[in-house]
Length: 253
Image (tube, rainbow, N blue to C red):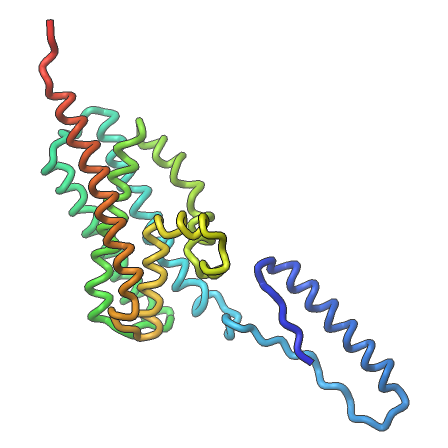
């Protein structure tokens, strides 16, 4: 007899599963009492997806994308906002491009450090398609950096940037699609989820790194990441250059 449980509510699912198993076992024992039958088989729990029931192999490869995104997003957005608040940043196009390139480089190195050294040291499944990772990691880092510049251009200070971004970490984890499939979410929630860089990154890095997928198999998520980069970069560039023109305009009598 098989009992399938939905693990969306972890504690409830565990409690319900134990209760059902106990009830089934007691019922069978009562029905088979006095019969010459072999003993009942023990209850065996088999996870459907997280077969090892571990954090390292199942959860960490997905959470790592959120960690990489949020770390770069917090730092870069706060840097941009704080420089604007103190008036120490020359809001010019080359300044914005330089900061964006520097943040993207830091994000790329951080991701390669995770996917290369940390995964290897911790024996996390990795190395499925290294050439594809080398192409997609910089795209992800550049997209997150562009989003950070956009956020930094919209808030008044670095503290405001952190206040805005810190509460987003947990929602981003659930919206990324590993804890609960995106296809099982309402349409408007899916639309929000695909505006977060970590969501397409989840559908790029895990297939490439853990499953050895090809670039063609993740082309949909790659296309969304490119669109995000274009949108975030355009908004950030417009706001920063527009503010630069306003500040540099001569003041009338």
